[in-house]
Image (tube, rainbow, N blue to C red; front, side):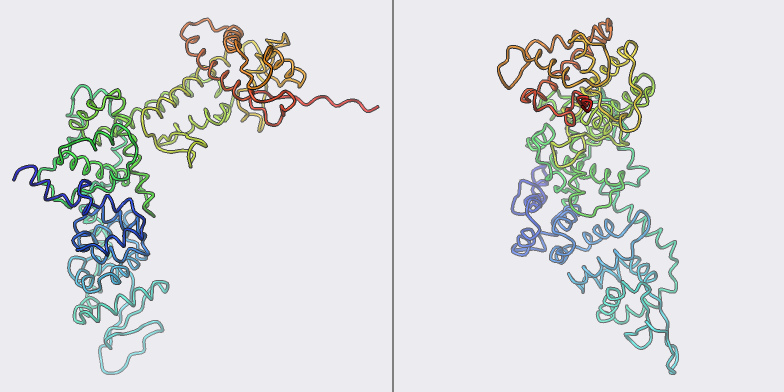
Length: 573
């Protein structure tokens, strides 16, 4: 069979076939997905033609309360995948979740569920009911008095549901099993006495692991290897022996090519553009399959509880972000080169390279803070560096580093998306190291204030500008706050010749940089080259802060770069 023929056989799960693909469905709302499936010419073929992972994605997207039409048309194998994902808390089967999902499957297709529970799902069935009910048998003609809570469906087996909250669901399941196949129902209840719970649960968990491993869900101790960094040089030297080989999809069944994870990526970055640009359908299949496996390995490594589809989307974007970061670094923005790297290396390797780049920056910061940082020797914390700088480093120092985006997005921290994020962190780290060195030099000449309590969390900006303002105006050098009169004198000088806002204070950036280098006695060329851009960045921020502020509007409570002392109170007459 030629390559195109094999690809055509799998066309119903590929993005390029919009009529059958799950990708268009994933962009719809839950109600629209249900309508599209119900209105399809062959709903069962549409749903069962999805990869197991895509089926699960749609269930989570639609919502557990509204997913019955999807479950109705799903295959037993898709049901099993869903139950494998939903019923377990670590290595324990959650009886409450089991009752809930079995009830949903019963509402979707009771006959198929009854058959599945007593065949392929038999081990789960026996363990679930063993943990959920007590069974007593009426063995003679004389009625036996059973305690309250017992009921019978056949006059022989009397049952009590252990968890009263689950009683309606479990009674309903038992009633429909008895109705569908009374003999099988009685055999089930009789066989519960022979269940070895610990061994059965262990076997169920082991078989679940085997099934999910086919989709990239590895045991935690194996999945965590995704965070083992790889040297970026491996992408240039072609040393593939130390990394996993790309997946082969020559004979992969169509239901093993999920597209939902990749369809969540809407960014125009080298990774997404390169994958969409490939004309070889088998290569695209390989990347879809690898990307889904990478996302699933991350879910395992992070121990994520999948409460809703947003958790799945977040993991997909995390996976893509680090893959893209390594691609941008190794290809230097060349899309042709990025495509070649994708062909030759696995996405797992690219993720590990990207994550390793961030991790090495984190290690550099930790080493510096432990060995060289002046601010840590002063007992100061990261709050000393202000919101953006301090929070950026704080995010970098998380167990799994995150990028600080502040008020620019709907959350404070997110995963790295590309080289621009890493470069921004590097810039801030370099600025902090440079200004920290400047403080270490200044504090040899100017006594540093003995801060206590909340003062220790104050940002560094006023300290530098107090020293510079006093120097510019010929006052005694000090880190301490300055008076209103001194502030007015400072801005009058900085704005000399400017008639109104915006006040650009031309020429003073160079004055500020040179003065601070001189005051700190920075004579080392290397340090001067590092401190200069940091000071220039601070000056630009200072100018932007005050370029529209009139002197009379300066408020000591809200002045970020200057700590303005209140005017002394006049003596009473």
